[in-house]
Amino acid sequence: MNDRDIFYDTAKLSRPEQEIVLRKAHSICERWWFDKLDCLQSFARQQVKGISFEDAMGHFVEGALMNVIYRRQILPLDEPHLEVGFRSMESPVDYFLWIIVPLKRADKIVIGMTQLL
Image (cartoon, rainbow, N blue to C red; front, side):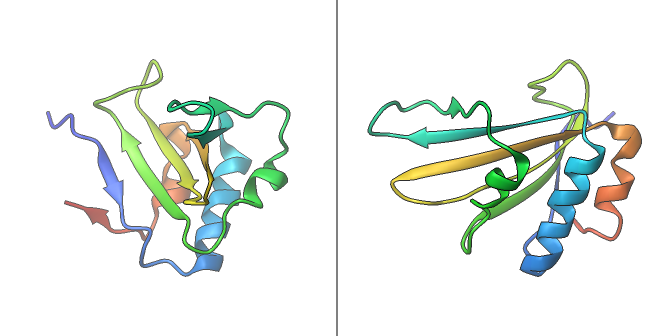
């Protein structure tokens, strides 16, 4: 059995298509959270509490890197899942959105996406 994570190619999606995927993932997710990395304060990401999804999406700016990953090897959670999110690549503070989609709903996100080898 192959236990490697599967990465999906989100670079081929237009910016509006990426936003649609993020919003769809949020609508069917088990949970989500938002982190920031401010290296002037810490070299570890810190969770941003009390932020709305819309405010978090405000950091999905031009140049942000989106990811869709089927996590099955390195599990930050107790079971395999689909991880959808982005890294804002903003400076001086960088932001990260994490959306956890259960595998039973993953096909709603990855349909039509190419797997990266």
